[in-house]
Image 1 (cartoon, rainbow, N blue to C red):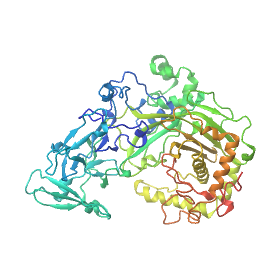
Image 2 (cartoon, helix red, strand yellow):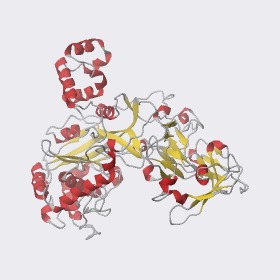
Image 3 (cartoon, helix red, strand yellow):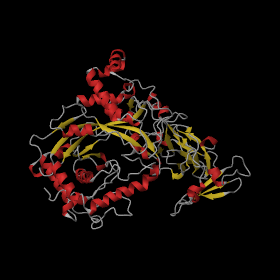
Length: 633
C-alpha cells in the first residue's frame, strides 16, 4: 500500500519479507512493479493488539551486528484481521508501504515513455476485493480503441551500484547523449522494444527532435563508461547520499541480483542459567558498558528500573558476566573484513548434543529413542534425536545489491540501510516445524580427516576456495588479504554433502517438498569438535507439526532412509562427468562431484548456496580412501 494511493495492491507472506520482498526490494505485480519502503514509513497505528516477537538470543545478535546496538524489538509485519469480511475497512489501511518503481512507464500500445509524475498516465484501483487489478493506463494514447484504456507498464531498466543505491534510468539524457533536446524543454519519448536473441534491442526515440539511441550501448564490457555517475539514491528511503564512487550497472526489472536479503535466524532453544545471563548482558551492553565498578553496579541495581531484568542473578554473577563480555571484545566497533556474523549455533549445538534433553515447551520438544541409535547405524551415527516441535525466528538486518552478502564476512559487501535513522526495531518472522538431528561419531570423523588431509582432492578444494575469495573480495580489503579466512574445512564438506543426500531422500517420503526443508550444519574441530546435522521444516504453512519428517527418525525408517541415500549417492546419471568433477583452476565454483541430479537442492533449503559439496567425501566413487563411509548399512 503506497502513501499516495492508500489502497492495497497485493499481498505477500510474512516469510517473503525475509528473503524475497523485504525493505528495498522490487516486487513485480501483475501490471506494474513497486518498491518496499523503509522502516520509517511502516506504521502499526490502527492495530489494537500486536506484540513483538520474543527471541532474546536473536535480538542480542541483531544488536551486536547493527552497531550502535540500539535495536529494541523484533517486529512482525503490520497486519490486521478482517480484510476478507470488509475489504474496504480498517484492515485495508494496514500493511507494508510500497511506492511504484521504476517511476518511468511505457504505454503498451503506442510506446510513449514518461515518468509517473508527468501526468501522462492515470491510475485505477477501484475494486478492493481485486488488488491485483491495480493498473496504470494511458488515456490519451493516439492508437487506443474503444473499450478499456491501454495498459502502461514499468519501463524495464534501472540503475544500481554495489553500495546498494538504486535509480531510474535517465532516458531523456541518454537519448540526447547528456545534452538538452534542441526543440522541446520536456520532450516526448517513445520506447520501441524490437525483441531479438542477441541481448537488449530496445530503441529510445525523441519525438520532438528525432534523436534515437539503442539501449544495447549501455550493456556489455564498455557500457558502464556511457552511464552517469551514481547519485547515491535510496528510493526506498527517499534520500540521496551524494555522488557515489561505485560504478553503475544497468539492470532489468526482475533481475535476481537487484536485491539480496541479509538475515539472521535462530532456533528458540531453552537456555541454561549461565547462557541466559550472558544473552541479557549482550542485550543491555550499551548501558552496562557504562558501569565501571561494583559500587556503581550496586547503585544501578537499586535505582534503575531496567536492572530488574537481572534480579534472578547475584551481584557476583552479574559482575562476572559483565567482565567476561568486556574481555571478549564482542562489543568493539566492527571493521570491514575482521568480523563475521554473531554466533547463533553454539547454544543450539549444546542443547542437541547434551546427554540430557531439556524439558518440553510450546516452542521446543525433543525426543530420543530409549534404545538409542539402531544397531545397523552404530558406525554411522552417534546420536539420533527427533525434534517434534521447533520454532525458528528470522530477522532482517539489511540488504545488498549486485553482490550477495558473504555469510561469514558480512562487511565485505556494503549493506544498505533499512531506515533513514538508526532503527529501533527490525522486521522479523517466526515459523514452526519439526526436524531430525543426527550426530556423527567424533572418532569416525577425526580418522577420516587424517586420511584426506594430504589428498590432492582436498588440496583442489582449498585452492578453489582461495581462488573464489580472491576473485570477489581481494580488492575490497585494505591491508593483508587472507584468501583462506573462514575456510569451513573438510569436515564441513562431508557433513554438508551427507545432509543434502538425506534431504533429497527425505523429500520423497515425508510429505514435504524439498524446498520446505532446511538444514543447519554444526561443524567444528580442535578444542570445539562438532559433528551434527539438523534437517527440519520451517515454513509458514507448517504451524505445529505434521509428523511426517519426525517419523522418519524411527529406527526401521532411519535405517532404510540412510541405506537408500548412501546407495543412490554412489551413482549419478551424469556420471562419469559428475564423478570426475573437481574445482580445478580456472574453475570458479566450490563443489566437486555434485550436480543438480544428485546433490543440489533449492536455495531456500541449503545454507551455503549449494557450495562445499562432494560425493566422494561420503561414499566411494573413485578412491575409497576418501569416503567417510566405506560400506552401506
